Every structure is written in C-alpha cells, then in structure tokens.
Image (cartoon, rainbow, N blue to C red; front, side, top):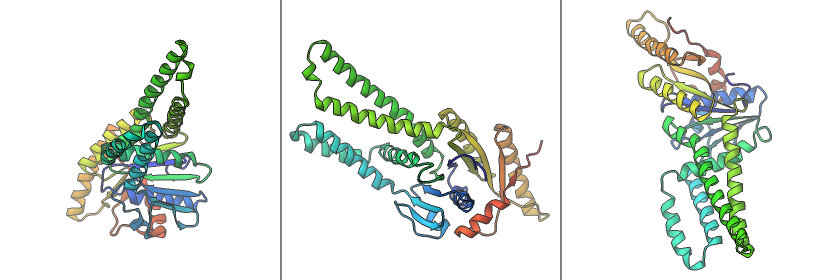
Length: 315
C-alpha cells in the first residue's frame, strides 16, 4: 500500500478526480491488512458513504471489521466552535455586554475561516488519538484550495495565539513590576491558561501534519490539463507548508487500444502524464486504468488498488 508506514494519509487534489474512491480503497486495504483504520471525509460535498455503500454521519460508523468512517458535519462543528468562544467571552465580560457578544458571535458563524478553525480544533483531537484509537487515519479532503487553507491554518492561528499570549504575559509582568500584584487577577490567569491550551492543540496538529514519519499527502489527479496543473501547484504548496508529498495517483487512464478514438485519447493523456513527471520529477507516480464502472462497496474497493501500476512517462 502507498504510504503504508505513515499513520495519517491526506488524499488531496482537484474536485472530481476520484479522491474519495482512492481514500476509501486505501482505508479498506489498510483495515484488511490488520490495521484499525478510520477514513474521514472533510469535503462539504460528501460522497464517502455512497462509495462505501453505507450511511455515514458526524460520529464514527463501522463499515466492516477494523474500519470506521466519518462524514464531518462542518456546520455543526462551526456552530459548536462559535458557542464555545461565546461562552469563553462571557466568562471574562460584564453581563451587560453579553447581548453584544451574542450578536457578534452570530455574525462570526458565517465569517470566512470559522469552519476551517473549527475543523482544525476537531482534527487536533482526532490526530491525538493516532496509535491509540486508530493505527491508520485516511483524510479524504476537499478540493485543492480549501484543503491548503485548512492545512496552513495551524501555523497562522499559532502565530496569532502566540501574540495574544505574549501580550497577556507582558501586561501581567508590567503590573508586577509596578507593584500591583493584585492586578494579576484570577481572570487574567484563566485567559493565559486558555490560550496555552489552544496553543498546545495547534502545535499537536502542526507537528502531526509536518512529521514525515506520521503524515504524508497522496495526490490524485486525472491525466488532463487542469487536474495536472492543479496537482503540480498543490504539491509545491504542500511542501512549503512542511507536509511531505509521498506520491501521486493518476486516475482514469485509458487502456492501450487500437481503436482510433481510444488511441487518440490515450495519446493526449500521455502528454499530461509526461508533463506531470517533468514538473515533479522526484514524485512517485502511479496510474489506475479507466474502469467501465466506478467501484463501490468494500470488496470492489479492496480490489481497485491491485490494478495500480507505475506510470510510464516517455523520455
């Protein structure tokens, strides 16, 4: 199995290239190899349950022995995240300001970044259980740009939390130096403690995602212009974020055939496989041949990766 030594696999790429099918196939293969596995869809347009032929929700559902699956309810996470922040603000604010806090939090629910921040908090708990709850976690991510914003969030939120914590600590030190120890209130200590806990969660996510022994990204693309260019761009951006890109699956490759239409389409696809190999020369490339029907259900998914073969770029 690709990335068999890494407990966490991020399956990424442009929409419509088969990420969910590949994610499900990897998860089934890992589970049947004896690794307790969880496959998670973070794509708002969920199709993981359809591929696995089962009904999934926000909590883990057992697909078969050793394999659980989740379709994350991002709206639920965002609502819970906003309510948690509102409760924290109420703890530190005068009751007269609570209606204003509630109004601001209602607006924040739909603000850019709220869903991603909530998802990162949720992933922190999930990744903390790697090796304890699950030996393998496969993340079926949303299309490229959304995934990248999500993966960059721990670093940016971490810097913001560092700044808040630094300001809080400088304020407390200043009060102590002025002889106002009593100004360093219990409330101030609770704020610092809350910031430190959040910082620790973000560091957990950041360490897990950028540890090549723990996490690797697997790109999926089809042998067409836009998916290939998106994969090249995504590979570079993931590497800049510190996430190892361990391989790429080119999905939906036409078989070699003498039929004029198929032969011409295969030649066109080969051009983009060659371009992918040229732009990312050190990335292991594998291909899956186009199938008459998309595999569904654990048995068909388990069989899918047996057809995986190394790409054959032309020199």
